[in-house]
Amino acid sequence: MLTPRWSSQQPQHLEGHVEQLFSSTKQTVEATLKRLGLDPAQAKVKDTEDQATYTLMRGSASVLVTVVHRAEQKATFLRIASPVLVMAEGNREPLYRRLLELNAGGLANAAFGVMGDKVVVVSERPAENLDSGEVEQMLRHLSAVADTYDDRLTKEFGGKRASDA
Image (cartoon, rainbow, N blue to C red; front, top):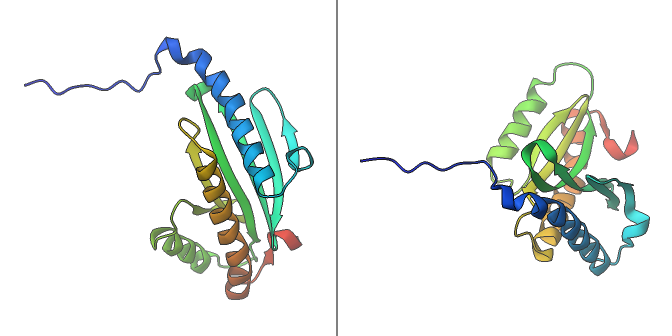
């Protein structure tokens, strides 16, 4: 018996769809920001043919909302990220362990990571079939995680909240 094979390559007829998806995803994000009482034009910090980025604050956390078209993947993604902590010098193994425990312990739709000397929290998904309710949920959840853990991790491991650096 033959096992069915699935191809991860995008059919050629969908290539124009990717550009339209980028545009419609930006519109969805901007409509969601408006619904949350924010001005997308004021929040927008970057707008190119393959990336639109908006920044906002929730409590002490700075949050980046990015719609990005990745040509190499022939796909559009929504990525919401927040720098949480500038790490203290010294042994970082206990902090790394805590971040992994948080990731594995039910931190739904978000994950902690490290970029340079910063701890970040990130949520990302393909833009295909994305609706404004999902954008709002991702934004509210990730910003709450960032705003909660910037204080907790700083207290537990030292360093500085990223918003204070």
